[in-house]
Length: 359
Image (tube, rainbow, N blue to C red; front, top):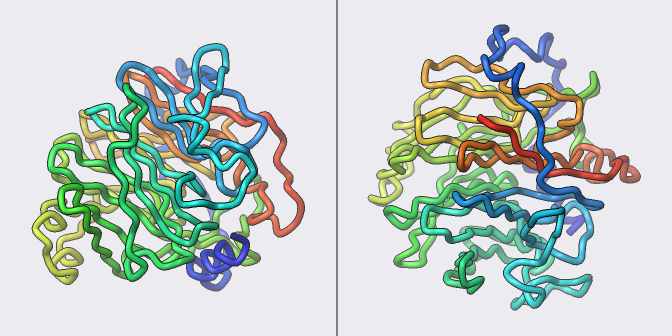
């Protein structure tokens, strides 16, 4: 896994540049109206780092355990009173054992679709292959699995964020190792890769607590990462973690198997974004970003203005965000303190959290 993560860092890195002069330049100075009233509610508390969180419309909460930390479970459900149980069951968890085809390996991205299917992308950093799973959360049964061909997701890929179109039967995923968008046709169980320079990281530093964040020994330059869909599933949105632009492209181009050149020519800027690890889009068309540099979440409204939604010193690296039932759920895992970033010992200070805020 260490070798794969180094390859990821090399793939995502460019040369060091001067830190941005003012990390608030891309955010409107006027706070969102909700900010003063927003309060953190603890959903789950962990001794090791949670990865990504996904909620269902009826309030069930699921989370991966982050591959950059060690936990016996790879996928869990967080229940009342901080009861954390393996999902869909204990048999899918490695429990400290070696990678195996019948077990989850290094899953990260998760989403619950409108049909109550929990979609999980397993990067397979130890197993050596990327897999996409679908679990019915009512029956806890596996209802979908696709092993990605190596020509689309070779060993060392880091396919980690996903957006699900349950209407047309597609899943879109972001690979930060070899910057690309992967599009899965659920019906035919096939996957294609789209690559373009617009998916690469911008040459800007990530600065947290006035320090440049390194990844794999070099200043972090993480490519396409947050990815989401409009509620009608017709617009795909994406951006680099180390990026300040939020892009959009018609999703039907992927469904129609359009040429890469046509897809690239159809990409437009949808707005600004912070340096962010996760995003969610609500039914009204608002985009909710984690803001890694400013301990919070931002909202890009339908008016095209990017504003703070919440700022709180407890939000130390909000890894991803999911919007369901009038709440925004997000993990806080201090990821930049993990050895892959620090190049030394783990500097994280448990506990780590899943929070939610009322929208």
